[in-house]
Amino acid sequence: MRDMFLARLRSMMTCSAVLALLVSSPLLAQPVPEYELKAAFVYNFALFTDWPADTAFDGGTFNVCISPSSALRQPLATLNDKAIKGRRVVVRSLAALDSLRACHVLFVDGSDRERWIQIRKGIAGGSVLTISDDDEIGHDGSIIALTMDGNRMVFDIDMRAAKQARLTLSSKLLRLARTVQ
Image 1 (tube, rainbow, N blue to C red):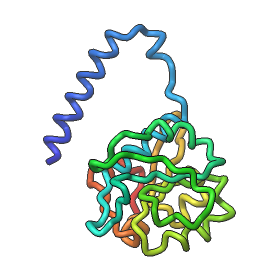
Image 2 (cartoon, helix red, strand yellow):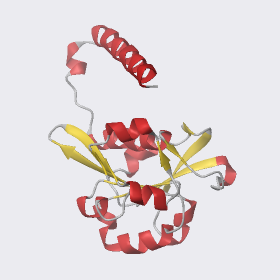
Image 3 (cartoon, rainbow, N blue to C red):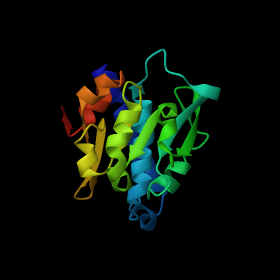
Image 4 (cartoon, rainbow, N blue to C red):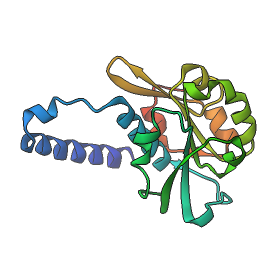
């Protein structure tokens, strides 16, 4: 399994090297904006997570929820109509807390800090992958805590929170985490 993963990684690196030769150098110097990078991380976290068999996917959609005031709302909107686990992604603005159980992924940030306790109660017993880029929330029950470490995006995983949500995180994802608790 590790050999297959390394072979894929080498293949992707080779493709990236070829692509780098084809793209002009000024484009290579452009950094990926932080929130676009975070949206890509959210998408990939969902790809490497398995939900229980009894999880409801109403209308065949995979719901990614976020506060309407979050700076990540617009970058996440680019995920609309992509596929995760064979289902069409729908990014939902979560203004009211009454529809939390319809979320499969929930991104919370500093704008949600005051209502984090209510959010945790609303998703208790549900299979919701919680991801946060807020330090306080990230270390207070969120499954995945995203953070910038210099110029790199890193993440920590709380396996206790994942088990409570009955989610299975891929071993590949666990190996890439900065810490797994």
